[in-house]
Amino acid sequence: APSFLCTCALALLAMPCRSPSVGRGIRSDLHGRLPHYLSDWVRTEGARCTVGGTSTIASATLFSYISSILPAVVIGDLLFASTDGQLGLPEVLLSTGATGIIWALFGGQPLCIIGVTLPVAIFTSVCYILAQELRVPFLPWLGWICVLSGIMHVMLAVSGAVRFVHQTTAFSCEIFGFFISLTYIWDALVALFTPILRGTGLEQPPLGASMATYRARESSAAFANLCLAIGTYVVCMGLHQAQSWRILYARWRSLLSDYAAPLAILLFTGLSYIPEVDRAIGNARLAVPDEIGLIPSFPHSWFNPLIPGSDASDAAAAAVAAYNVTNDPNKPPRVLENWHVALAVPPALMLTALFFFDHNVSSKLAQDSKFNLKKPTAYHWDFSVLGLEVLLIGLVGVPPGSGLIPQAPLHTRALATITLEPREGGGHREVFTQVVETRWSNLLQSAAVLCTVFALPVLATIPQGCLDGVFLFLGMAGFAGNDLWERFWLLLQKKEMRRPGHAGAGVRFRKIRSYTLIQLGFVVCVFALTKLPYLAVTFPLLIAILIPFRLYVLPKLYSLEELNNLDPAPLQPPPYDKLPSRTPPATTKGSAEPEFLATSNARTASAIIVLRADSGDSSQARDGGAGGGQAPAGPERV
Image (cartoon, rainbow, N blue to C red; front, side, top):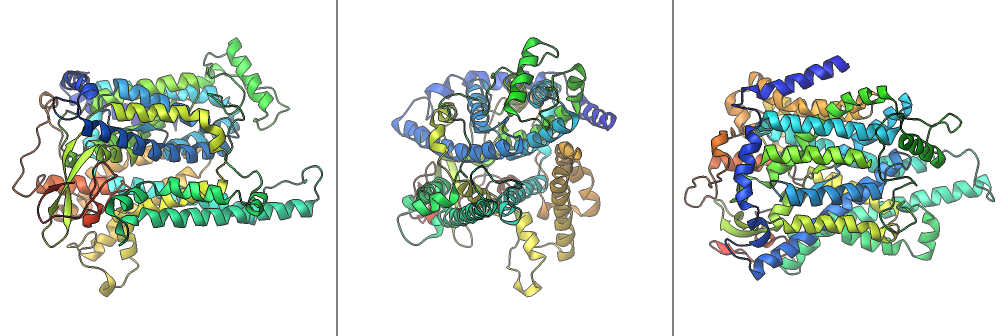
């Protein structure tokens, strides 16, 4: 298995050898972005800083903070449970905030939001299981995984392999988005129904309580959390669809839709403190350290000792043993050894493969051509900066972060000025006329996430059921806009019940069926792989295979016309000498972008972006995500 993984890594590194010279992509990125660095800080509209632009930055900062902090809370709670308390919310907040600040200062494209994602949480949980089975100290081993992966990131960026991300199409994005949604729903259901069906697994009740009394309290807490989860989910989904309501002004409907999850959590957290409900829930609330400040989830140093046999490594092993998070406390503490470092190479390869897909797709969606950005891209430089961040994360001992989906493209949208244009056949479509390309919003929201460690007692009031309800909401909302989800339901419908213009319309239905089954097969394989012991760490490799499968296998199964309908081919990246300039493509009258470009990028983006607005409804137009108005007969600034 290690030989196979190393062969795959070498093949991946050898693919970009056809590029003119090593490191040319990074040099080209720096040549294109450095002249704009000062304007990223001092300009909001053209050559000047305006009050309107500053207001847009403030609105985008608040929106991005809310959309980043909630997944961080959910993922922190998931990691705390899956790593026996060695990682939790403080580590997730530190990773998300610190990497976001570094990215805002040194990243090439500051519009991309950085943080700990659900796939990273799954990967980290699997690494913890492997560490327990192999009797390896988890945090130092995770540190070496991040250090080695960071080096691989830089190698890929220098070699020019990042250009391969331009081959990503909706085929891969739909599978990845479906897998994320399915994982959210599965984890929520397991957390809700396991205490009901199996209990907590304690053979003896706590001191001072009979077994019958303890089981009754346990069942009461489980059902109370289930009710809170259902209520949170229902309110989240209801508010999420507020833009289709026929009451309230468009601006208020947009605000309710954007902040659906925090409003639902606020409501049901308050209801959970009704005396009877509070007694039923007990201590089933978000687990955070008792101290206020930048405190780890369990008592130990933030410095992650990575030198085998050092005094710091022995002290860290003793701290973990004192916390009693090892499988067998009677055995000696697990001390980092030299062979543990070599054992970190395969997981580092998997983490690199995961970030190569996850981060670059997130960055690509944040810079989609529909936004009409004026400043150039910097994919190679950005991936090298991400590699350095991952390396630094390994020295601290917190989970690594990458580009967030859908937060990154939603951040760009929040900084945009949007107009509505009539669409042929009725309705209106959104056209992005200007985006405030700044570093301030990313810097401020990342600093706010980092400062949230001083508000942990407030977060500790959130019931576990509310977090599970948000899990369900994120999963179900993630299916919206995913053509794979729509085609899945087409397979279950009668022919006369299928709506006109459905996903894949114009292609023979048996081809739609086979294409959908192939995608569902990949989803099942990736999901099942994450549940297998030992092999689960390789699930990023299966995700990385999606791109070559689309390029080399699907064209043999479907005609060019069928693929252009089901999954338009990606645009080829421009040569290196044309990368620094970003000239908007030629457009025809009444069209914001070429037809092929609009079709390809819109399909790719809609496969992942969850909290998107339906541009067919005029009431959903807004400036930055918090405004709106009635659609005019012609173009109008919203």
